[in-house]
Length: 332
Image (tube, rainbow, N blue to C red):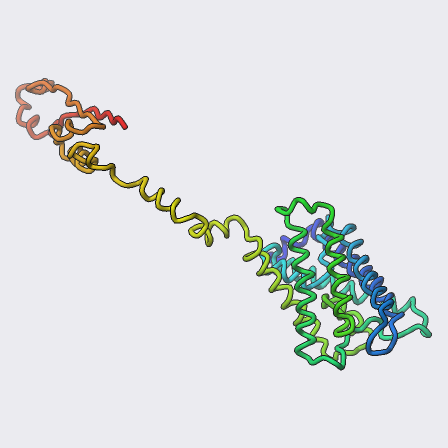
């Protein structure tokens, strides 16, 4: 077991785990603090909705700027699962990342519970389904808003997308704010299982809590598949799968025609296959008729020079036969 986790038990990775813990703690603490101003009515006012959206969005932007060079600033188990599915992270490392995120969200909610006066207490941003939507609609809403968030993460953090350097954190923050503006009246706009886990633990309310795991993780997986394999595939994958369909039929025809045998009208009757056959079968007379090759036979003495005594003449006759040697000069 220790051998399996030897790769993750390093100072650099422990720093990354600590960064995920602190980043998720601050994000949940600041984000949930804006929900205490929400009215208990079913549909919040526009000013409250804008307040919550900007607070969550700006909090994510700040955390990404602060911790992206330390841990990557996932701050979201759904993003971590998408990274594993797209082969950007190992499973063992993802386990520690998700554990740190959930612990950080729980710690942030607990700190908010301690510092908030009892008169201003409330559900502390617990995500609940609206009475006007069904269970499947709630899953679909969480799937859609998490899809657009994770797709934004992949698109803006892609090293091949260099024209957006420095704007990745801002784009991710905008994606979180847009998701809240759309989904707060329906599901509370979680987009983050850890963000829903902390308030659920503090309020000990687990009704439909699984929706905020199934919906975001499913949306994150769909976003990872669509971006990696459809919208912006890797070069090796593109060459492997789509290489045969990237060329026009005319270009393919030119390539195949370039390997054809030359026209018989402009060349002698003896072809290149017969010339190679003549070489292997020692047919020098046929090979001399080739326009692009000449075979010159070296003149050999009528009798080989004897280097053995006369009494070994019989043994000499049993030696290997000396074949004539050829100098081959190919002129293309």
